[in-house]
Length: 337
Image (cartoon, rainbow, N blue to C red; front, top):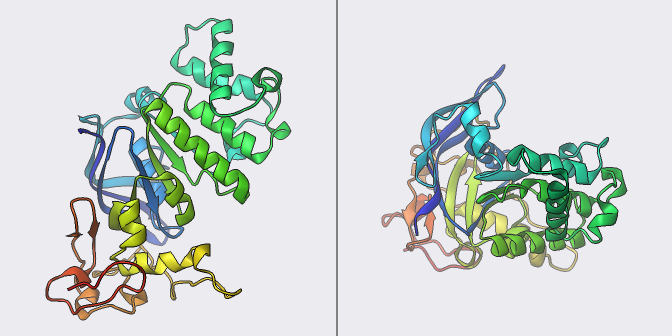
């Protein structure tokens, strides 16, 4: 199946008072139509910047240093703002983290969804716009849409506000949906409902999705494939089963015990010691080396390539080099030999 989205060797930096922050470093991945890819990692690892780079929603101090972005085979790397406006909404759309910063508190929800519809279908009559808004509200699970059409964001619960944001994102039937931490501001019960809704809509409409999260529990519920990011780079990628049951990168090994399922008798969850490196001056070797109890001497000197494990599973760790000593993964997997 041809890829809907291809990102090749993308690097994005921010010019700051402290220097050049290398937020995304030589990242490559692809996404097929109807597929859900989850991008996971600690806060600040570059997940959100990666998605915003593809949609070209970065601030003025950001710049794409290198790389290529292909959408449905078309190279959009050099597209200007006018070109991107034609793609946003129709080709791809984004669900942001906090619905209260996405919604206008002074306008009724129905009108806000209607504005999104009119942006892409400006010739629609008022009655047709209203019908489309009610369809979208029903699609995202807002009960009794007629009664709630004229309500304001403050009349809605957090879950209902997030559903409203989803309706706006789906207004033009995009082929690709970016969901940037869509459940972070919600309680656990509502998180599950929103994830199930997202998956249901994605399957019903055939929409591909990139789900950004630092919560592996969220990923297990919603994704087909997972890309693990650390310090601006993808360090492991594979199917959900491969990442959860056979992780091969030491950073992924560290993430797994942080899941609540690993909690034992009231003991605190595991945390990876140390801090991620400053990306103003990233290490020349493996950025995770200083926090990696399995680090080899070469980790401090040379950045590892992505080693192939299966046709769908790759990890950037020198432990997968045939010359490396055998290590038994602490969670899942088999010894690296």
